Length: 168
Image 1 (cartoon, helix red, strand yellow):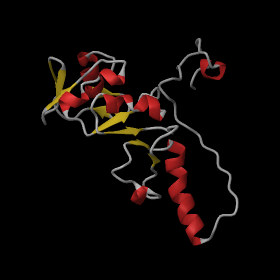
Image 2 (tube, helix red, strand yellow):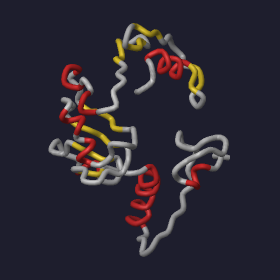
Image 3 (tube, rainbow, N blue to C red):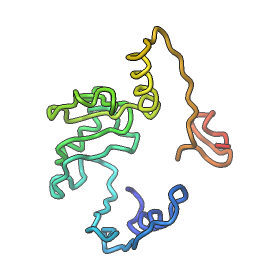
Image 4 (cartoon, rainbow, N blue to C red):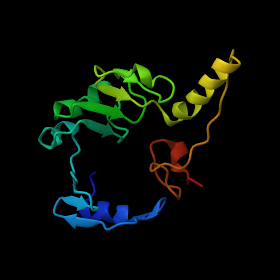
């Protein structure tokens, strides 16, 4: 995370969605301790420069929304991670997995994996059951999303004029 270790610890202690963290949250240098070992906090914009090799990271979770395409997400591999899971649709990913629908096809050869979109993960399992049970010839769906970190609570400047409006 690009924020300081202290800020990350504070946000973990007092989460607006999940409430107060039930345990102790301590800052120890560049790490956070929640009672089960140190969690190193880095502040690096370039995923190729992250210390994945030194930390012996098996899976890097790419959740920034910036490095979603395979060529960008693979920077985590260059940094030493063995695999990358992208939390969004990923152009060129080795595999796109939707648990409960196609997770059985995930293999060790898949190094950059997309977890599809939140909409896909909500719709696909239900659609699969309906299709397998009664059949689906055509479909249409609408989704309503909760607020995102990119939506301001007051009107403000934004390159996407729709997102310049207040979230509420």
